[in-house]
Image (tube, rainbow, N blue to C red; front, side, top):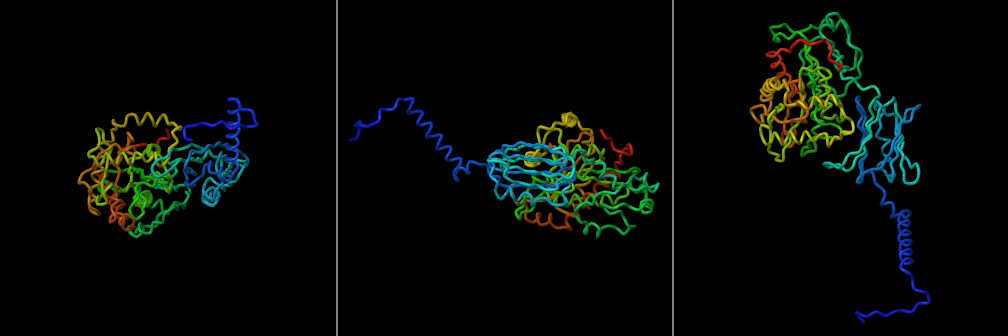
Length: 470
């Protein structure tokens, strides 16, 4: 009957409370052990959802993405050079097994990768290296569309010097004496559209080759003063293709990635600048890999750049937004709500791309503390107006004036800096333009014309032949 209790006789004596608890604990522990060794127990292991490899001259990045944070340890092994990474509590699934196939012979640092079970519950990755490296291994919390990430950044023991990229174009002084730069590695991206638009002139040095001294000696050291406003030394321009690698930037409705558009335009602009007898250009990235915002600024300062040009493709929540824009750093806040929103979005690139926060650069930190005091802000506004005026000849302008916002990538205190929004990749019509090689080429031409106008009126001051190395 409900509410009644009937004692049932048992041939066994009643259990004490302690005995009952011990029996319950043993039963629970047995069930847990059974769960671990049963097929169902595999659900407790972490599953790697994706693996990505980003090879570049600066460094190679390997990213492992999972739903849960990965437990790991790593060590470097020498003779031969290897990086060994043990992943604890991870299932050796098809994703991890596909990692070796993602390594190509062109990777500057990785020979091959092996993945396999090392011992129960542990998957070991063995990365065979082509040279000595200085690895950075760190984790990233979920952000955007990414889950937990384990990042392996393989930096060379001897860091890549950005000055080497500038040796590809010799200085006017070297041209006079018939000097030639050392051989360089070939750079990606064919320049068919670029070469079609160049004026006929004597054969130029192609990237990745050694220029013949007679050709270089015949190149003029600089333009006459009446053509260039008195420019009598080589002008160095840093071109910064926005985003890259883990950070795709904005994504258009047709699936276009901002990082691909910016790199293509940046390479075209570099080719055009290098064709100028009194200019040379350096890219902050020349392939699809991520560069933290502060490192982009540091690269420009290391080569003592006269100008920093960051290239992006705009995006907004409304697909009707359209037009090209030019931004400079703001001392007092954004010039519009949209500018503030855009700066916040672009400054979040480090979160998406993945920065190792354990690495500190004290010199750069001191530099970034005094951002609002930049003496280059007035020059930034001048070059911004010159470039914006030229952009208006090839595309509608989003606003008829240079806008201002607190972009982290524009915060070099001693280099005039602008950020060019080529068009709205979130607008279907402009997305199609951004993927058109002819439009990309016209965009690069327009930016170069703006730079010429600026330097004709504001010739750079004299400086040492080689950039500072501090």
